[in-house]
Picture (cartoon, rainbow, N blue to C red):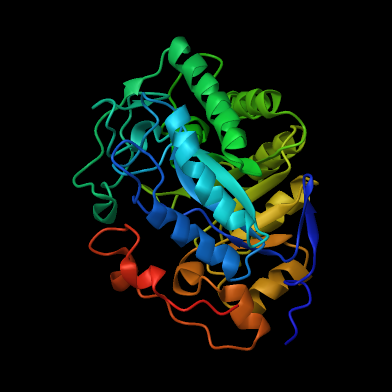
Length: 369
């Protein structure tokens, strides 16, 4: 199979990508304790660019020296020192012609490790479901967060804005606002986590308000010549089975409103990107995003089979695909497909246990060029 769609060009904002294969954001808890990027991270990210991916999205980067950090040893874009340590990482990725996007993340109530504070904040004082992730250094249930004040909300918008400016200063080609997977912006969107009675709670329109305001504050900060995207999901780290309360109607409202903003793309993630997203017989999340917005769509979720990825694009459900575990197992995934080389299976225990930090064995893997 020639995979003509996977290896066709596409424009994302002001950038032209050589193929439709993107590295998904994956938390690897390999930064210095104070959030500085490391040489190990430089080699880790460079491998994906060297291996033929047209774009790489960083793991979630925390925004400020306050409540945004979610994991110990998570990298940040909170200060000028962070900016300086990201520059060589960005340069390494750019040397191989790949686009590099910084994912901006506020953990909110789903945080499980923060060097700046022991407290978490969220739209309401409601704990996330489930338990903290052991391979990211957590254990036990999530603590009950503090309900955010209006000042906290203003601070969050400013933090996203500042981190976006820092991303541009570090040389990134764009930012992805993390509005998925149960982190802060998704907590505002989620009915059972958001019990507010002000303009940020209640109706879906109100619960979406902060996301829309963050998008516009980020765009205002970085200007028009910088890619701004958003990641959206129903599923969460703490609740992998969650679905929007009105299914496809919610999807129509969310994606049509995002379409009216200044973002350049929507990145949707689902457990299986080819599976019905809202119950039996319904459309996929990527197809809903495609139907209700005119923006380029990146699909994520079990798309590591090249034929499946090709078909998703061929059938018009998505414009690009992002790979997580398949990229971890095959940092040279695009080059392997092009050269008809066998893809390696993902080994969860070898790569992500006992914790998800970047292993020497990953960095020593031969990259097909």
